[in-house]
Length: 150
Ligand SMILES: [Zn+2]
Image 1 (tube, rainbow, N blue to C red):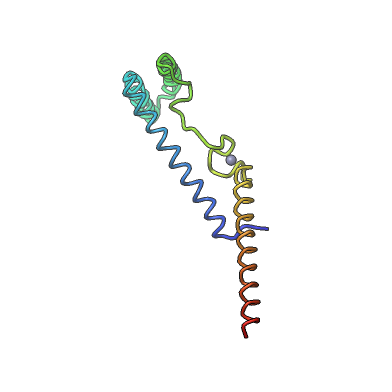
Image 2 (image 1 turned 30 degrees about the horizontal axis):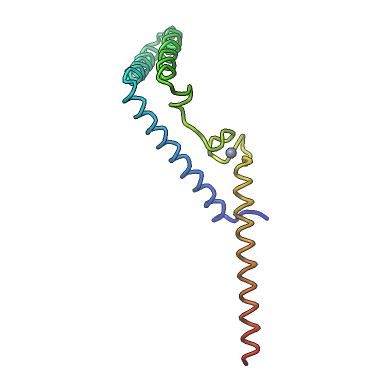
């Protein structure tokens, strides 16, 4: 059985919802960390600032800038990770957390449906066929009833 367009859309809408939820919970975790470890926010600001400065230098033709930035960013990111760890949080606390790591909640991996998509598809088709069975059962019963009445 194949998915109809509206069934496909329904599944993709769920992925969209999940991605938004992931984003919201990441934002909440960030807020929490910024409150508990303000230095993390400062480090992130510095990372952003340096990245912008590097982009400017690259535009001006300074190709070395990218190497300097890479080194500096690695250092800043390490400091950030240490601060987060020291406060008792896991390394990936500020990363996006996915329900399915394989497709990062997009439903697709390398142009193929992810196993989580196939599961959602099966669930939807199964629910649909059950619904149809129940519906045809009721229709049959009411037409029997109708036949007996007339
Ligand atoms: Zn998946």
